[in-house]
Length: 138
Image (tube, rainbow, N blue to C red):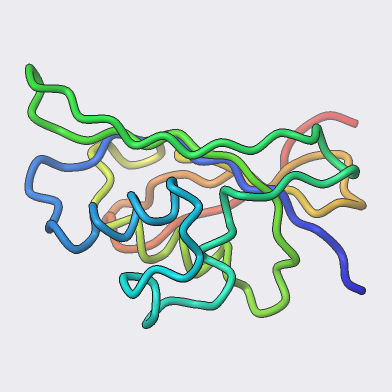
């Protein structure tokens, strides 16, 4: 069967984010797992924001919005998948170069269903990878 991992992401994207990245995120947010835009991505990306589980709050959302004043896209999304092949980690690594932020800024988290605390994800200094640390508290 497998175990679920929750993902949460909340970021502003750089103004120069390529259109294919925006299209991929739109397909993910529209819960279009069969989109041709996702064919070269890990198989569960199309369902990443389309599932909730009973091990975490049973919520899911994917919302990609454009702000005409700042001229940038923003993504807020949450879901659960069975993270068999590190798809969540791959997603954060793929997204990092397009995140508009400073080193150390919070990007999101992942939380394995048997964990009480999430693994927090922060923007790294080169914006090409994520840094992660276990959440604090019990």
